[in-house]
Length: 270
Image (cartoon, rainbow, N blue to C red; front, side, top):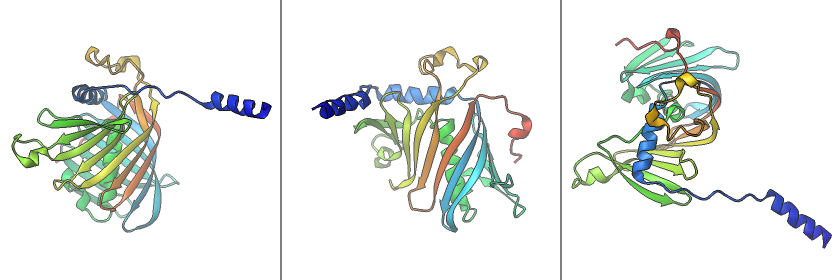
């Protein structure tokens, strides 16, 4: 009897009530995405990436650094365990530049063509998408419509293709976004092809508070979403929908709104 009582007490000690699910409208979640994106003007971080792709026989471990400036300037660097530079990807104004120090190659082109540069193209594109999860999920544009539904203990938002309401294609989702229902963080995003197939899936977890200095506090219009500490996902995974690659990012550090030095993020010269 004493043993049973002790076991019952131990069970009560480890049990924790789950917080109730919060409710939100589609309009509120759309505004939340916009506010979170607007709260980040610059960002830098350090991460470790594990990469799998066709042509890469075993998963490769890469140490990396990211630098970002709104609206679309991004620089990714990858290093081996000894600190040797493996690659550099720079994006800006719809252009990309990929530098491969080990081969001396420098590749340039349009961002939409990044996955066409050989076997490394798709892993590079997945890397850029994964880092966008740390910066902030892209907001819904004014031209896009959404459908919001409950999916278990989450909300799922289908972002529909812009167009006239009576056009069938306009009702096809181009993205699906899942929100958890305590602080409404995005925990998954699917990017879809025009045919409705999953092009890539991003999953976000291990959300942690990040420091924002007093001089970097958001404007007054953002006070509602920033009442709690800013949090960022420190683990992000990307999977190609056709099995053409996978990527796992684990951040060591994320710094929002730092002052970036010119050499940390130089613009692309077209």
